[in-house]
Amino acid sequence: MGAYGGSREIMQMVSPAGPVYQAGTLSGNPLAMSAGIATLEQLQQPGVYQELDRRSALLAQGMAQAARAAGVPVSLNRVQSLQCSFFTKHPVTDFASASTSNTNDYATFFRSMLEQGIYLAPAQFEAAFISTAHTDNDIERTVEAAFNAFKAVAEGR
Image (cartoon, rainbow, N blue to C red):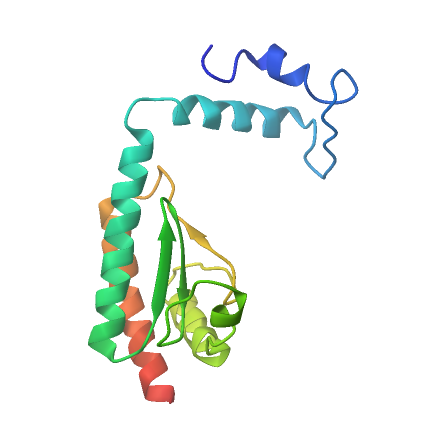
């Protein structure tokens, strides 16, 4: 058990037994529930969040360096393992500043990353996440691909 209690305890919170209503394709699916419980158990291990933060910072720093090296202005926002690259020279702090992003540049970046085997969200305004499965080698490979993708953006301008 841990901060989340046992699996039976958790399931008693979900409708019809409890007050939390949850609906969706995988709601109540035994495999999805098992995966969720296993994830929560992994996240309770000592040092997990610190390691996620370290890896996320490594990726963010690498992405920022790659963008600078390619001459592409990017505002990179990061909170722990969540980050988003906005293709704008202005800091992004709200919707109005996010709206200054060049979505065509992001589309070029996205397609280049995809061609290199790096799967990102297809929309400029969605976030990317680091997981415990990502290694330092994965991050290094992603930063190398990002440099190539940023170069493609610069060449397309």
